[in-house]
Image 1: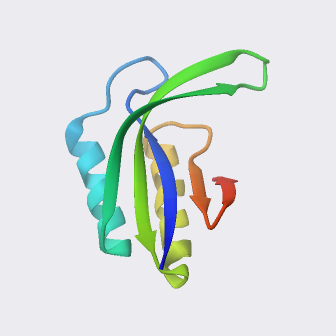
Image 2: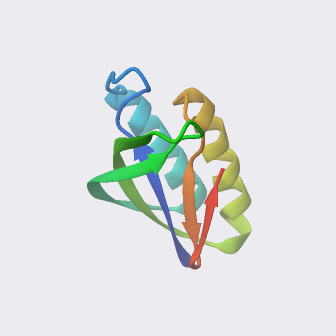
Length: 101
């Protein structure tokens, strides 16, 4: 088992907070795949969009203990939530490697 890290945005692109039930649903689905997670709290992130603008997000950091054979299921779930949360990508770090899904 190794640690994976992902960041879940707290707001949509219009600045509206996501419902707590939506975030809880995502966390519960991650737990079904991995067996558990630790929410490290809110963190501030910055990124540059294709137009060159630097944007700021407030995210929830989730640390996930996961077996390598379950990693593809986690990737698939985060890709699904990328669309639900209307994100351009979702961050996933595993074993020192970073992916934008």
